[in-house]
Length: 483
Image (cartoon, rainbow, N blue to C red; front, top):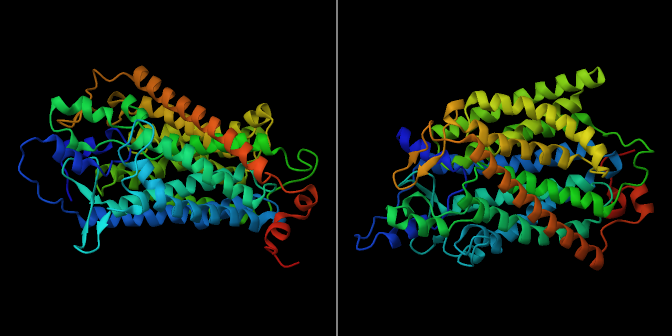
């Protein structure tokens, strides 16, 4: 469906996921209005969102699984693949049971309600009608069932990302138990705080603006910009991973024995699949097949390419040689950094963000990792944490229309944008920083409690002799390669 330039700008400005309650809220706030016709779904928008959902699944299984799997030693290859695949699958099930409802229905500023438990109400199988989910354009909707599926993939990959921080020494059962707790008490509240709002059609007039804003998530109300998950996904997961690396402890022999990746070929394949899938992750977050989906698409393209070059140059200057592992890691660093900015910055801003992310990620896995002293096995915090924070803050800079960005919606009633002479980079960056800090603190507290509970009940770590033999055999009774 074609949209006007004004509407397209509105679709990206706040850059977070639309609330499925928008259609209902709009009808409630329009007093004495005639009953509105049921929203009609554009096949292009619906098709694009289904494709985007498939692309995010590709990111996780096989993309993330192979990227992580190639980085561990051969004796732990299958354990990492299992942890990624089973974690993703489990979270998708929990999402359908209660996760979607708690993240994307009206509750309070920190968590949603129970209106969509077991996915009830997303469609009427008798009438054959589908509930609408708002996008960022007034009068434009997609089937809520598609929106729910798209968001399920975000929840799944976020939890799977954490696995890399404590790879090669955690109990499989402990990993799954931790994920249930963390998903429920960290992912869902942060997703609700950042992405839940009442949708553009709920803003029917100036008299309802305050009431509609008050129903949104806490971080949304602040005005933070997160197009596709810089806070919700990357910072949230990275903090949980770092806490786990500290609480589970270092691998046996860490710092004394060689722990080189066993297959950089598979890591490169995984990184490439991540790059391909990330187009659905970022461009799909526009929720429509419109101009801002295209902007997010090209920004994801160029920022990642710039980060590959940035990391490779930095590595060559630092070590004298650029490596394949560095190039693959640079791609992920660029993808992470552009995630919150994808539809919120211009192409020039995306190039700068990507280039800086390449150098920042390299520092994160070298200098910062030594400073922290944690055995973050696959550098979850060094890449996702550092570049997620970088991207979140730089979004506030390059969203400025004075620097080629699309600006942000200043008035959802008219869908008008903040004018260049009014936009304040300092104010927006401060808002972005507050969102980052809230996410870091929230995830840290939940993670510490969750790891401690699991350690007390199950135990977090496998015995030393099992760790030395490898988790493939000791935890799963199989090997990745015939000897």
